[in-house]
Length: 417
Ligand code: ZN
Image (cartoon, rainbow, N blue to C red; front, side, top):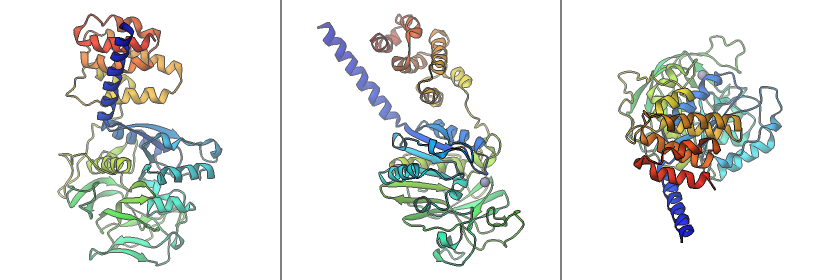
């Protein structure tokens, strides 16, 4: 009878745990980086921070081998993830990895193509179909027509003028125009809004199949160089007469791809990545790519045509910061520090040294009289599956706290199996 009761209790607790996880809707996300002319060392941690900080995604960063390295060693298990974010424009992947990525997307996987990643893989047909439009790295008319919006507001998809694809405008604040106000990603956004200090890409070409242009820049951009097309990067082109796409949504097989040209990175991210327009569209595009829907409200600080809007306090979380902040967690607060700690556990894989370090930090929170019961509950939940003998006494010591009885029983049941 007693054993049966225990099993029932465990089943109930597991059900509660599973429903709690589902309610959180945390989508496993893989950020791929490791090569490219851009500041990927700066941008990838910020992308992870933005995604994790939303509470909707739990992202890990995977670096490819360095340029010229053995790419046959790069074989991510794409199917483990709901979303893959590309911050990459380097060496081509192995045929097997390319095929696995195509399978992943065809089978419904979500992809975000971030900023310079539209320049990756000029030779890879399926990749160019997934991104819709791309530029640089020798792309020309063989990549497809130029696609843009004319000054009169017509979407032009058949400009087969010869020439290199990809140009970069002087870095500046610029206006973005929401072209598609019905798509889930851009629904509810202002028609005109300002992006801060970004490096605008344009003159892109591509197949543009199953693609919707969601937003464009304003046509008053001065191009200065075309990397890959014009060696030396000399001044080269007149102002573009076009509205160039900056946000695109593409369908490929059962998969969805969000291609954002925004968000050029400086050290620590910088103003373009701190721009609310970049952050909010990235999160909305990521959710759409992962699920096909967008449940997020347009944030109150979304910019308008009147000016840029930054979140300068957006600094990457460290493990020290996460454990310092989590002690004051309660259910009305953001779970971002808890999400960060969970992401660190996931990243540790089976590295026992790293896991033990995290477990010790968790035990310190359990022992801390100033830590809230809600914080301790979250950590008991984690320890119940990843804890070792190290944490057992600290867990037992909490059993006298009536607020924690249930969480302690649950953790001990699993820890002592
Ligand atoms: Zn850039």
